[in-house]
Length: 116
Image (cartoon, rainbow, N blue to C red; front, side, top):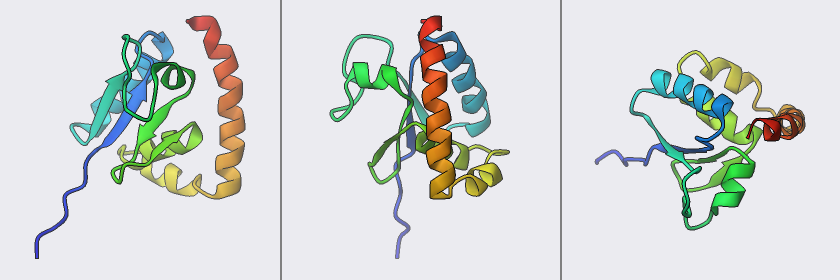
C-alpha cells in the first residue's frame, strides 16, 4: 500500500500590505517548503473560487483537501504547520475560541485598511 500524498497548504496574502508581508515572511522562514504562499496583490484571480477583492479583504488558506478557509480559521491552519505554533493552534481551536478570535481579527482588519 502506498501513502497518499496531500497537496501543501496554500496561503493567500496581501503582499502590498507591509504588516502582512512581514508576517508572511516570518511564517515562510519557519515552514520551509511545506507551505505555499500566493501574493494576491497583483492583478488577476488567485484561485477559481477566490477572486482578488475577496482575497485582499481577508486572510485565506486552502487546506490540503481543497477547502478554503479565512480569518481565524486560516491563521490556525497555518499555525498547525508552523513549528512553535502547533500547540497554541491546538489550544485555540475550540469553536467558541475561534469565533472570538474571528471577531478580534475583524477589528484588526478595520485598522489594517489605514495601512493600504
